Length: 206
Image (cartoon, rainbow, N blue to C red; front, side, top):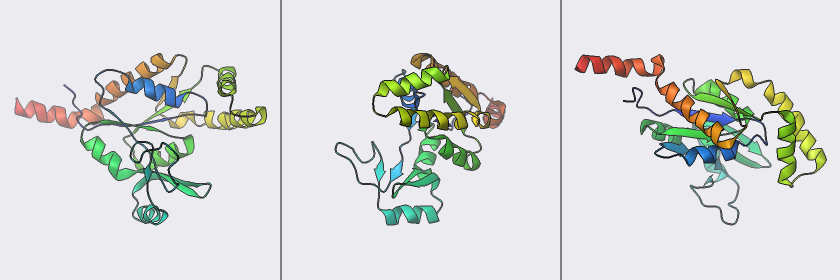
């Protein structure tokens, strides 16, 4: 029996190159899960092959700014002339259905959400070491040496924010990292502050 029937918002973040997306995909490949991947809302035009509601929620700039005024984003930012944000109402609907909402986001956005969603679970994904992170970025083959070093410098500053998260998961092996996150989610559902109300109600009914 799961004492806490409401789903959890699980915020996964970490520096570029740690494998957040790979770990998230491995998590979703596990059997019998109730995970829901939260995608962003954006004002940019869809790229070739992108599907509304699967890759992003594509909306107009006017609609996005109206949603900002109505406080309908957990976090949002403007990047290269376009808005990107995490829609609050879609996440709340999925949580009410008992799904675990997985949000993969950059560190800055995660810290914005921390202020609004006090009961969310924040997981910081880290590499086994800085050399591993460098090699992962290098193996992508998409950026110059200078750009990679810029990402490493940014990662150094983000590592100092790890204490603001609830858990640190080392991505030494993708499946192991996914298993650790699944275990964290199960443990969080059993926390007293999440489950005591339903447990006391159950006792009254027996």
